[in-house]
Image (cartoon, rainbow, N blue to C red; front, side, top):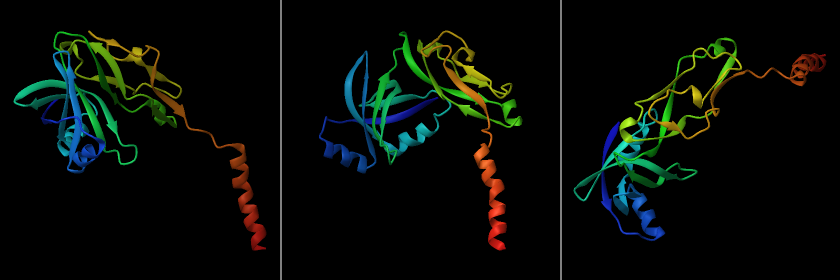
Length: 204
């Protein structure tokens, strides 16, 4: 998916200026690439947030318009406030069509694991993977079917779809596992049994 995002050039400024920019609804950012020197910009915070929420299951491209020229970009990095979760800074990288690049792709987990019907639960360990390829070879999506997973089963990077790209993670990197639900400990069981006795003593 591709989003159109207007940007304004800004001059490097002190911390108080950046705080004022954020208070007015803007997000300070930088755009850069092989054909573009690092340029400080700002974008509309609400517009970006709306786009970002739509990009959880698919790699997003941003068509950034700056001073009348459009730049085809990906979001390379972001800085988020640890408490408010407000975006503090964004890094946009200009995509070079003929060059290999690194992309972070969301994984789509589909199906209901058989292990859930056996009393287990699904633990998703990693929701994105990094790949290296040319932009034209990017996978449309990365789907991992988990329906056949029983308690104790897992899927690794090597189970992901293959194509004209390479995965940065080890092929044995686990992505999802089905755990058995933790059995009640003996101490907890004894405590449950003892509770009625205490109640009976109190009522006598």
